[in-house]
Figure 1 (cartoon, rainbow, N blue to C red):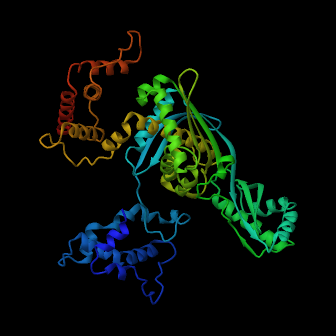
Figure 2 (figure 1 turned 30 degrees about the vertical axis):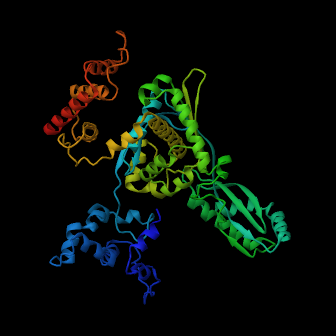
Figure 3 (figure 1 turned 90 degrees about the horizontal axis):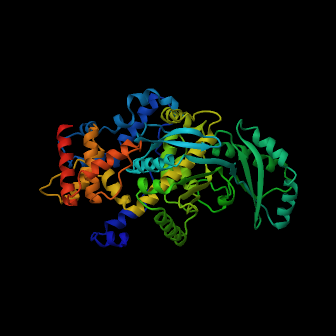
Length: 534
């Protein structure tokens, strides 16, 4: 649909021309008060609450009721109270190294997945996973993938390479000067290293990769950054190298740039696939066929076939790398753990691999050459983010490599769950249930039985009080009868110690003979009764 043409064709007064015309510049610059402290924050809020867009908005919300004053409407909405709660105001000093023009904090829902069993080079044991997101179904999906990993003995992972880079670039008059500069620069690495490392405790320069394009010379300076993610470290350190070159080079460049675009900073790019930016992590798991079938509700062959379809689709779309949704878990973990969420733009570049083993199980791996994470500095010092890292046991020094390996396991979990959900039909179903607004009541006089069944599932998973074990088993049996029909699996053997599997079998078997529609009606009624008594 051509939104532009549609909009202007409906504007018979040609108001759009006036709206889009360049406006007269303000007579004086409007400055947001700088600095920190409670008094400055109050000044900013006075400015923000007095802006025209906000005042027009609250008038619209109030139906343009002239009987109410601006302050009356503001009091009812009170964005300041929401964004600048008392605890935030009292502790405003802790944010000064992370943001400018501070006015408050945004609360993002935090969920927990796991624990995931790690068999890593650095991460060993069970780790709970904090995920900050507004996307319903993501935490549930990651949790299901982790369940499959844990039933398979855990995730094996290793940090393979490390390196964070910056790409200073120098422009010369001609190729002869380029050659003269390169001949001199080739013998300067030790001096570059001294200049760079004067600026940092964590950063160590270990390589420079030269690229010549026309009369431009790119110096990709590659560092390790210890337990810091490293972006600021390499920027400041590389600035020192640039200054050293400008002072000492026998050939003076016409122009120079601290970043020439080849670092890949916050940009997805192919070059990282053959090297590293941040930490290169490889993680893997082998899912036994029975785990694939019982937990993911698909067969190994179906997973492999769907992987082939998806990879061909990605190739046709021109995607960099191949995955279902690396960015989802990367961003949710980044927000929770004080990492830079914008790095998801580059961190998502990697490969997810899925293939059959000779035994008929499913081998899955992720190769992630661009994991930029840290456990010191930056956002990791903030109270909420530090608390999340502490819950994982990964706050502070000597923890960054372990965190990177955990990232790898979580990304595998996301690939396992979403990839199988697309095959089984659970993908749309999960969003219908988990993202549904439960303020919409179940009404059998209006809703079809299918719609009422979906609403009941949504209400059930969002109950503030869990049903009893007996009710849970009854609901399980009715759900299976509604979606599958009569029981079609064998009961665990008499000598099996899997009591949960036996209970689930019995709960399903007792519903045998009911039509799917009758089972749905019974399911809905059980949930309605629980909603009345909760």
